[in-house]
Length: 273
Ligand code: NDP
Image (cartoon, rainbow, N blue to C red; front, side):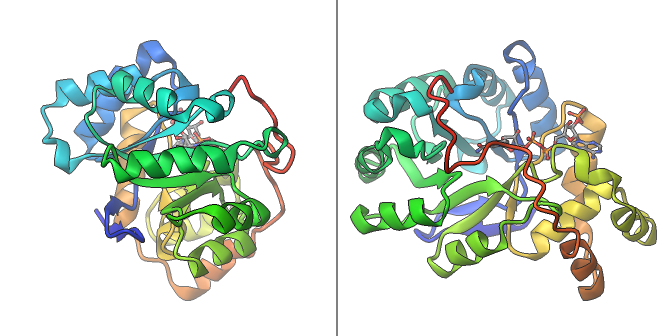
């Protein structure tokens, strides 16, 4: 499993497993299957309401803690109480230390993300979190944060897939030493139906999902595909073994279509999340 080194020296498995929209009652089973398949990096969030299922799967697995990389995220409605919110997540996960804690969305209308970042910096300083980062931060949110921050975010987790690449934002993050993490890396499954991807997949005797994940990995992007199915989990993990040619990579990059699936972080203001 390829690993990347974040800007504070912490290493992260480049291919992880996301649990957004995994129902709380199924999360333990799904994460146990993912760990059994070989995933060692799990991405959850307080807003997904399934942190305790992730924690139960970790506890049941018997896998040494230092072999796992666990990410969770601060809810939008709790940016004013980041310390308490973090402790609730830590308890739900049953972990002493969380590997990566992210501000889930900037919610610029609240004007709280810089204040929340200062609380994350304290938790990081106290070694309760190994790395802190952001999610859904657009260039102006990154600039506003950096103007006040002592710690440069280790990661910006943003929507990236072939039909929605945010390449300017990704380039800016990389220049600043902020690792780029792609959420919805398969476009929530929609990008799997591309003819271009199908042709490349056939040439590699691979699946469209594997080809798209290999494209992300080739760019140094962290990916966290979700699947509730153990065969597809294994298939996605095996993408790390696929090497695409420069022309194949370019053909996938040419699929950019501005096709955002999620909300626009400039205006998203869902404080219940
Ligand atoms: P993905 O791009 O990972 O797509 C998931 C969909 O693709 C599911 O419907 C899944 O179906 C299907 N799928 C997965 N693998 C395959 C395969 N090999 N073949 C065919 N279909 C496949 O979308 P997500 O939105 O779930 O994003 C992944 C993770 O990113 C989330 O779980 C979460 O951790 C994170 N995320 C973060 C956000 C943020 O705001 N920070 C926002 C959204 C996501 P099935 O389960 O049936 O296999």
